[in-house]
Image 1 (cartoon, one colour):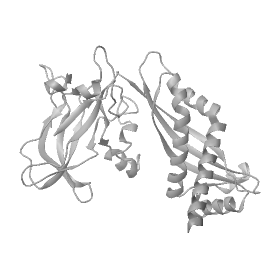
Image 2 (cartoon, helix red, strand yellow; image 1 turned 135 degrees about the vertical axis):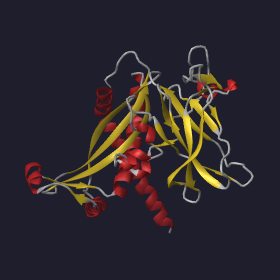
Image 3 (cartoon, helix red, strand yellow; image 1 turned 60 degrees about the horizontal axis):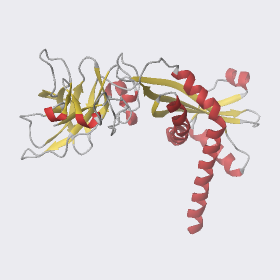
Image 4 (cartoon, helix red, strand yellow; image 1 turned 90 degrees about the horizontal axis):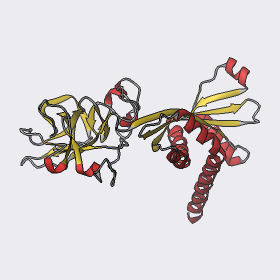
Length: 330
């Protein structure tokens, strides 16, 4: 059981005080009908799907018209509510959901299909499934997927919780995405910096060819998964903090900045080193007018590159200070 709540601004977060027409707080007052659901068994100990585990129980969220068309309906009238009956006891389940025509899922959903296709890392399959597109609506939503959470049904029929999913109406809000790369200078002037550089190189994978090295003068390394995650996550957080205000000035709400790859470039003569951090930026807005999201994001990063670099240096300095304090305290 649970709720298909109306994600009016399509940002994957159930926000308070979102206004649509004469109604306030619509994301907590309205649900979407016509979402089709089946149960899918999960392993309660690992919270992972059981292979071939779609079971027979199915249902549809409340709120459809006379011809079965999906509608956005007030919760007081049952809008968006769903419940399964005749469920086998003492088992754990996910919900496999498919949004009706004109709608997509934005929150609480996992996209295993993109993992299977090699388009999405398993670690991002749930937290960021709705940040990638599999349909025609654009980035920010998916049409079909399993719920992020699974619930357990005990021997008396009681369940451990509810599963609520966000559902957007296509056209209410336009999702946006762009890919950007930030080039950072790597300081290896100190002994600590040189040791850090050697560590990154030894853990990484060299990807440049001899010809590319001769042409550019750089040896390039794809960093290890640990280093990519660490550097990429911090950089994405800093970039998001700088982008938020500039995008808001253009009527765009920033949803997420997701790190993709981090590449290390080491000058053959040792005179220069650089980190290239590739990221994917997601946002949404309500047209009109049409926006050039690629330009807005890139221009914002170009304007704020010095500030971003300072913020990253401050972050690294703070980490070193905290490490020194811990070491000194023994």
